[in-house]
Amino acid sequence: MVNARDAKRLVTPLWRRLRLLISRGVVARSDASRGMQRVQLKLLRQETRDIEHHEPYGLTARPKRGAEAIAAAVAGARGHLLALVIGDRRYRLKNLKEGEVALYDDLGHKVYLTRQGIVIDGAGQDITYINTPTVHVPNDLRVANNVYDKNGSMQEMRDTYNGHNHTGDDGGGTSQPHQEMN
Image (cartoon, rainbow, N blue to C red):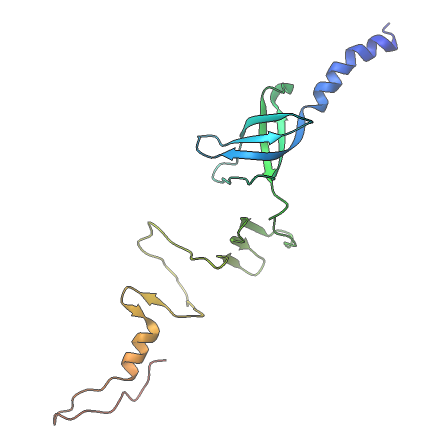
């Protein structure tokens, strides 16, 4: 039979390893230049580790200093930590409705899949499509401001059309168009 002191001596190392299996940490820096992103995490008292950050296929994000992480010790070995999840409560979108999804960053850019439709917020910056020969819009496209192409704006085209005259058969001018382009 094992006495209490011997049982404690046997269980204590196991308990310590279990407690260190999952840790919370704070991002001190990140390196996105490698095949697997690396982050430096400040973990337990005075413990700082440079570890891999595993991300879901098809999604990547470089965390800012101060973001929070959950790290796991593979097989219980503290020397083989992996950052599983990194979040940042400073920039996380709040008050999403159940089932809604959003991509966001620290500048306020977001792609927001709402219950009413998709919202793309450029946070006051341009949205650029690259390597896209054609953009298809199968239904009406409504634009709040001017539309531009390589030759100018739609408003400039309207102004030119609405103000144009033709030379008549007698060499004199004709009146402006009867129907204006709106």
